[in-house]
Image 1 (tube, rainbow, N blue to C red):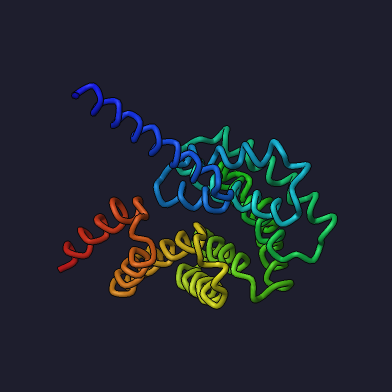
Image 2 (spheres, one colour):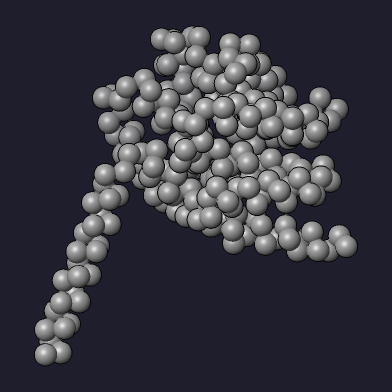
Length: 253
C-alpha cells in the first residue's frame, strides 16, 4: 500500500514538473524576461538573450528591438554585480545590432536612446571615457527626444544621464526625477507598455529612489507601495528595497 502511495506521488510530481516546463516553453521572451526580473533570476534572463542571439538572423526588426532591450536591462545589472567582462561583451553585441538597425531605420527614436544608454554603460565601466563618450551619449539621447518626444525610452535615458552627471556638467537629480515622471506618464498612457514590462517596474523603482534622494520621503513611500501593489511578486523590491527604505523612514523620526 505504501509503495502504491509513493508511486502515485512520484507520478503527480512528474506531471507537475512537466507542466511547469510546458508553461515556460509556451512563454514568449518578453514574459520570460519579466518573470526573471521579478524573481531575481538573471540566469534565466541571460538564457533568453543567448537563445535569441543564436537565431538573430531570423528575427524580425521588432524582435531585434526587444533583444536590444534585454541586453540593456542585463548590462545594467551586470555592471552593478562587477561582471565587467560580460557587460563589455554585451555592450559590443548590442552596439552592433543598434548600428545595423540605424542604417535601415534612421528615424526610430528608441535606437538613439539605447545608443546613448550603452555609451553611458561604457562610461560606467571606465570613468576616464566620460570626457569623450559623455557628450556623444547626450547627443544620442537628445536626438531620441527630438524624433520621439512621446517615447518613454528617451526620457528614461535623459533621467539617467541627469541623475549621474556631475552638477558642474549640468547634472540635476531634480531634473532627472522630472524626466522619470515623464517616462512613467507616457508608459501609463499605453497599456501595452505597462503590462508585464520589466522596464516599467524598474523605472517606478528608480523614481522612488529619486524621490528619496531628493528628500521627498512621502512620495518615495507612495511610489514603492504602488509598485508592490502592481507586482507583489517583485522579490528585490519586496524583500530588500522596501524593508531597507522603511528602516531609513523610521530612523528619520
